[in-house]
Amino acid sequence: MESIKPLIVEIKNLSKSYRRGSQIIPVLEDINLDIPEGEFLALMGPSGSGKSTLLNLIAGIDKADSGIVKVGGVDIAALSETELAGWRAGNVGFIFQFYNLIPVLTAFENVELPLLLTGLSKKERHEHVEMALRVVNLSDRMEHYPAQLSGGQQQRVAIARAIVTDPTILVADEPTGDLDKVSAKEILELMDRLVRELGKTIIMVTHDARAAEKAHIIVHLEKGVLSFE
Image 1 (tube, rainbow, N blue to C red):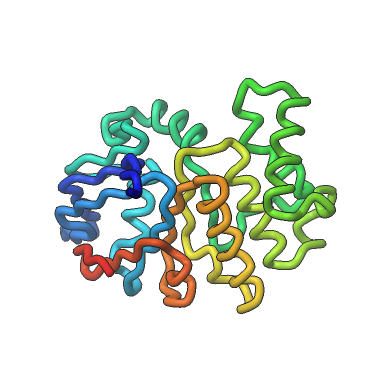
Image 2 (image 1 turned 90 degrees about the horizontal axis):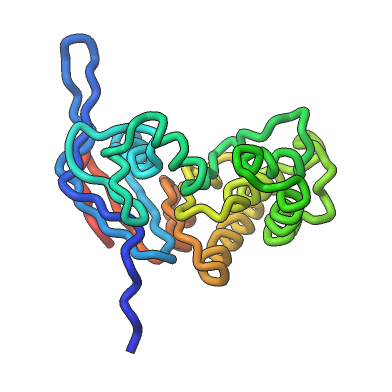
């Protein structure tokens, strides 16, 4: 009998709105969502549906108006801004649509960046970086600069940077949105392998149905309301 996975993300009665002048625009309304550990979840919906807002709330980048967001048992809505910054550094790996690599740093140096905030020695940092680049099959490109890499290779460097701290969750915002079809397929296969072989938990925002097919769970957001496939 298959064992029940523990929950890594627990969202209860979550609501979020933004103020535009004197007008209050509701974005998310009474959201409830549980994500088990080691799952690959795709969050889909049209532009303006609130999917990036929900991702930012899970990642501790934004704060909800009401409700609870727990990640790894920590109620992140209750943390101060300083506590949140420290929590994000140790618990969240970010994968962006446009890679967000620093052009003047090599692939190795880009991946090492999050580790500079830790207490690891230089030798330990180098071991972690080399391992992360090995996982994404870029050991032979570690001294290359972003401009010397293809879009797919740059995204793999970004994924290595996201996993190098061994975070609790990986959040990916349209990770294949700037890639050609072949590179997008390779990135999705890599993300799938991170889940299957390394037990990572990935929450991915996408509007691409083909990208969502790789996920284990597909959730749709429409006008701030969740529905499941």
